[in-house]
Length: 83
Length: 429
Ligand SMILES: Cc1cc2nc3c(=O)[nH]c(=O)nc-3n(C[C@H](O)[C@H](O)[C@H](O)COP(=O)(O)OP(=O)(O)OC[C@H]3O[C@@H](n4cnc5c(N)ncnc54)[C@H](O)[C@@H]3O)c2cc1C
Ligand code: FES
Image 1 (cartoon, each protein chain N blue to C red):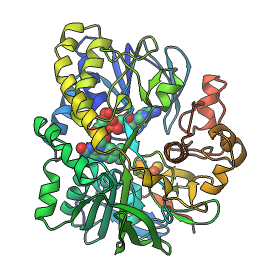
Image 2 (cartoon, chains in turn brown, cyan; image 1 turned 90 degrees about the horizontal axis):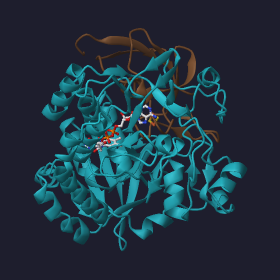
Image 3 (cartoon, each protein chain N blue to C red; image 1 turned 180 degrees about the horizontal axis):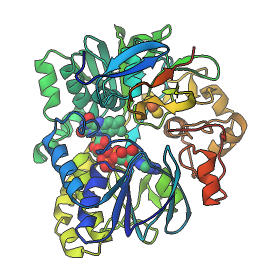
Image 4 (tube, chains in turn blue, brown; image 1 turned 180 degrees about the vertical axis):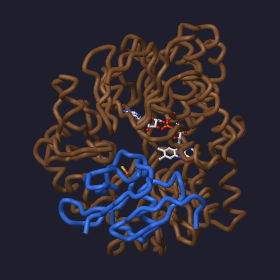
């Protein structure tokens, strides 16, 4: 268990992460590999890890199309990946 | 919200931090803006929450004491008129006024398409490293590393420290060229390499040159990678595949400002001044030279922008030394022509709009392909497929239309610019 953990929810599942963790990492820690579905349906996950490819987009607190690799985890965040 | 400064720096990586410290010493009002919530750019990312590198700590501390303002989570997206940058922040659009501007926008990894390259679990080596620094779990994971550049070694070493099992590291450049790079390394006490190649082999990780990936397979994520040395082909099982082919400069913002390029990099003079008045550029957009090259260029740009020419000049010899290192890097890790034919006609090139290579080939140029197939029109705005298309087909992005990042419409309305958003429903944080 991390020191001073931050609690958030990934697809409804509760995850504890340490401060300084990005959302993409929290999603991976929750065991999710597929972040979004491409326009022709294929599964996708982070590619660049630095905010330029947009493959890591997820819904954060109801806001769609957020880059999970550039967003730090905050207490109570609700996060959803594509089905 | 409006902000006004004497010197504004875009990018808080090594080049931007060094520029900010040098500029602040001239007593001017200095601001640095960065897209990310942290300081340090790519290499020093994560150093604020988990300090590890003393060089990073020194520069971050120096920046904090410099008096420069940090505007984080702020992406520069357009330049509606000289002296004004339009930026996006999660809470509000920002208009930032400058007298002098230093562009330190860094570089990104180059990704080349091959069958299967869109599977989850295939990540750029630098990108994976960056994610791991911010908590991505790799403990016990089997990782194949392939592509090109010194970054492969540094990353493999870093991942191993985090508990990953590195299956192999494959460099596309042949041994003869990589070994030829040796003398350049010896004269620059190996900052980027950190003796990583030798260390890896001591740790039992094979480092092979003249080997490249031909395909990746898996169901909903990557499971195995096929590699070749041009004669033999074999398959390796993995949980993650870190694959990237050197770096390409982030020149979208410099282009949007009208800065001239030369060979794909921003053209600068001895003071790091670009072709546009009062605009400077430092670090990777001027050439891929590593962290020390970025630091010295940033310092020169910061001094010059603050009209302190003597301290800038005192750094010229050091910069020349790193420029030789930079030229040696480019020679050693030049991409082999075989990589142009990895993608099949049904391989996707544009990952945002799912455009295949076959479809792209039907068009005459990048512009034509863009209009007809939407290739490069998606949210990454050609940042991934543009460089790949240029390498494979010899055609790529010729110009940039603002905004350089997909922006919330509100940012653009505030500015009253004519910039159009290719995808109005798209938002980014
Ligand atoms: C993904 C990645 C990982 C890397 N990892 C390593 C490593 O582990 N070890 C190593 O030796 N080298 C690494 N490198 C190489 C390293 O980046 C360079 O050697 C060095 O950091 C270059 O410094 P820089 O200041 O020029 O650019 P960067 O460090 O890239 O900094 C540029 C900064 O500008 C910001 N930016 C860009 N455009 C905008 C905009 N429009 N608005 C606001 N902000 C913007 C970016 O967010 C970034 O923080 C990596 C490179 C990449 C691409
Ligand atoms: S992984 Fe590329 S934008 Fe997040």
